Image (cartoon, chains in turn cyan, blue):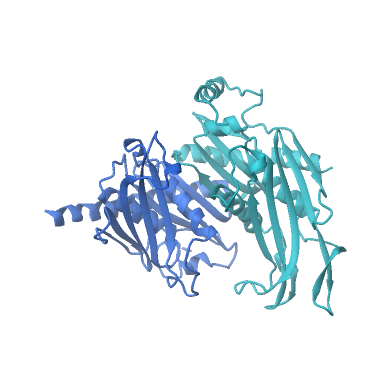
Length: 265
Length: 233
């Protein structure tokens, strides 16, 4: 279950020669496939496979009172569950800090980039707005759940339809949809995580590589504009290393964005 | 034209900083740190036996950080107890400190760091980390270095140091971007987060500003530690 130390050493040794076990370049992602509409009950949903890592993301909507500080905007709630079925490392029980952090990083990726036009999801100011729930489940964890889940969030949102709303009865008619999609921007934000292994920065680590990683920086960005960021794990980075990660983020977004577009076709 | 901040500070000026070591008698180490109205207190207990037993790490000790905001520390009362936000900040703050705390010196044991925000006017996680670093040093925990934390803000297009609530809620132009950063005294980054909108070039500028501000904070921390030693004499 845990990656043996000897494997971690080998991963580092390989990287010193610019190589990874699976032959990828340091800035290369694994194969990406996306299937949308995996649940007919959801407003939007997606299954994302990034190499052997697999996640399911679903979007559901209902009506609620707006938050006091945004009376004319829809609400957004992102949660994640790291299912015990997806790895021997996960246990059932209350949400782990890993799942809370993952959900909150992706919440900010969506929110801070203003990808969803939440102001268009107001029914009656101060009283009634749409709630958007984005729920993430890990199905098979082989590293980089964070980026796979981020792709799933975007794919599910892009394909989500707004359910019918019965104005007289003031309730949602579940199972029937309008022709309207959840209003999202054309520019697609993506969340990309950079891992430091030895003196090297890699993207999209497998589980073994993730275990060899000393620290990570997740950057939510779109066409060179960074809107969210989080450094995780307990090793320090020099300013030069952080600067180079910031520099890498723009190209990485282009690479992953192209993969996303292709996978969604 | 230079940018005018709501409270008239210079762009690279923190609010008035206060630091005091030894504010909670029962604790093994404790400290208060404030940026203006944002006041954090930290208490350290340990190293002590890890409980529950399944969390014991025999290879190295454990640093456990608990960040909490008092219910009345903000205008609109917050529900007491841990939230998703506070749990994430606890983890991030733990990571911010771990590179300098020599946890390998006490395998199997735990050091508990409790941080409470008494009064909040933004930058609470940074004030908390600054107080926690002092409390750890005060407790005599072996450390390679101390860390200092500050938030850099981007208000419209302007970078500023030590973001206040009024600045955090900035709406004009490009709005507000909040970038809390924690660094060691030799300038390594142990924590960094970002919410908002910024391009890479300016973000690198922000890191430079943080480095300068962290040096100032470090001096304030060092002074507080020295003062506590003199009092004990």
